[in-house]
Image (tube, rainbow, N blue to C red; front, side, top):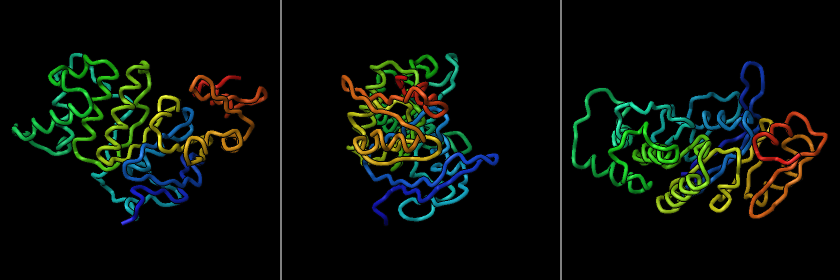
Length: 271
């Protein structure tokens, strides 16, 4: 078995004749917290879809434990960007989490004490036990994200993918979600790959960063990747990196267009 839980080797994707990703290579290890960072439209969601097996690659390989990714892989959990449940939907929190056990199967699930205890344990792990019997649609965004993380984790995946889980959350909710994920990664050995357009909430816990821009990636620690020469190479024009009050700002040159405009819009770039 490979020491790499996930490995992408020279992956490229073309959609409608347009190259969306090119020559993407990266590895993810058990228990590692990896941030998938980049502006909207850079290819982050496409990269997650490739790992999930929902998007075929044009070239390259996707390997799990050193072998080609199987068509269905229960070792990968997924938290989508939006839940989309109406407030009056008659689904309790514990019902949603329970669906992570066998929601893909037909038939009526029989209640059991073991199932209930497992759901309660998972809700406790993500800090959501106190609203276990509330309707999911009535929860705040941060509370809903905790529920969806529990839903994804109850099947005991080894790799957890999250698509922009911090979008539209307040600072306190962001910190809570990141703290839960970091603790679970360390304690359970789960590899976490979380996509975001802002790296700053992840900086205290992120082991490595996969920075996506213009269909390419740079991979390494934050100190290695978030450097002017590295990011300028990705964007195809000069950018600066400023660290102030514990935050990182990517600063585009005044003459920048296109990629720099995307950086300015989505990464809090100063221009």
